[in-house]
Amino acid sequence: MKKSLILAGLAASVLSFGTSAQQHSEQDHSKYVWPKDELVKKKLDNWQDIKFGLLMHWGTYSEWGIVESWSLCPEDEGWCERRGASSANYFEYKKAYENLQTTFNPVKFAPEKWADAAQKAGMKYVVFTTKHHDGFCMFDSKYTNYKVTDTKTPFSSNPRSNIAKEVFDAFRKKDFMVGAYFSKPDWNTPSYWWSYFPPKDRNVNYDPKKYPQKWQEFKDFTYNQIEELMTQYGKMDILWLDGGWVRPFSTIDPNISWQKTIPYDQDIDMAKIAAMGRKNQPGLLVVDRTVTGEFENYVTPEQSIPDHYMPIPWETCTTMGTSWSYVPNDKYKPLREIIHMLVDIVAKNGNLLLNVAPGPDGEWHSEAYQRMEEMGKWVSVNGESIYGTKPVAPYREGQWAFTGKEKSTYLTYLAKEGESVPATVVLPWKKADKTTQITLIGEPKPLKYKVTPNGIEIAVPEKVRAKFAAQPAWVFKVLN
Image (cartoon, rainbow, N blue to C red; front, side, top):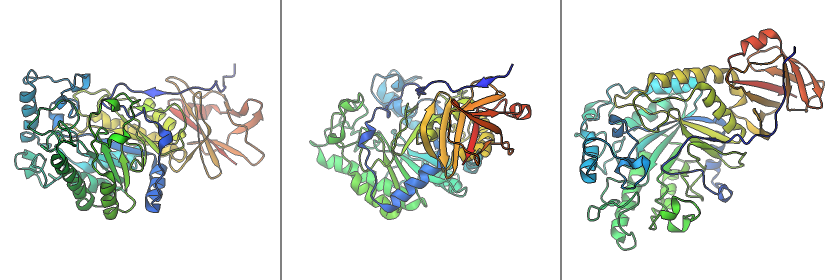
């Protein structure tokens, strides 16, 4: 009996990956502001072409294998839970957490190994956490002692102690675009969490209008640290700002749950920061996450994929494992799920930024390297359907995804576990004539086909079917 693969009806294809401390998928993307700077527009186009990047969350919190920074936040949320010997007393816990600086010593740190693995996986850009909300700097800032290069930190004696610089240099050598993750809130500096008051929640713990001099101190501190990153760490392509509650009060959307709880105007003068950044790094992409407007050059749904094509620049940031930060014995997403995410996102006009968390010794889990290698095998064959492509209507239908460039249209079938290529495939596509050539990428010989009312019917030889049996996705190339 001949098997046949026929297009199913339209599917929503929403992928979601759990709860996050700050949901970034609730924004009204119709408010996106296109950049006017020609260099920014050019870099944004280049960024949209490369599609696939690596994000790394890393700090002293990896020593405890806990959620990054959030256990310092005095909110009664699951991601803020405190555990361990000091957990019963907030102030003792904060002291113990910050004391991790005195034991942080990632002696296996070798960013070239990460850059090599990411390149082989098909990744083209990197975003690295220079500072998370806890305020610990993974770079040599002269404006704080709470940093990896301070003498209190054992790793400071290592010749590679300026971790951010080492990471950026290693990835640039592999021709990656480079981005600095930087948290706008800083729960260590006294100009944000002033010691006069106890912290109340994630926000600044005093009213900036009532204490304008204290707030100006914080604005200067933030500007100065970002200026360090923009002037002392080589060519920078992306400034990726997190902590969206630090924002002008006028930008708060009361319809978004986490935004309506922001009590104060926390304007840090993004216009000044962006101007400085672009003066030193022409064309710099500024990503002021969730603060819709001219300083959010692309939007960043977190741990989720939109259920439809979006005509603006966007990037899903999500984890390869279950956590943004290192946890022992983390469970990693299978190859099939990651490839399906990448294809789905690209077909909807987005990029995928996939997070891997280094451990306290400076290494990734072995499974992360394994997954990178597996991704590379698929991408090295099928990358032409990903890089430099544009979404093609209808974008997504059932298990099909549509992209294209120049005279080629790519129809990618997202195969389920155990699903193999049938003897007859009906492509949901009717644009073909006598000169049209159709191939299954990875198999150079053109396939025989005929146009039917349901689409293009293709006969797949047994040898070809066997070759693609275990693949997570099959890409049919229609060349007109």
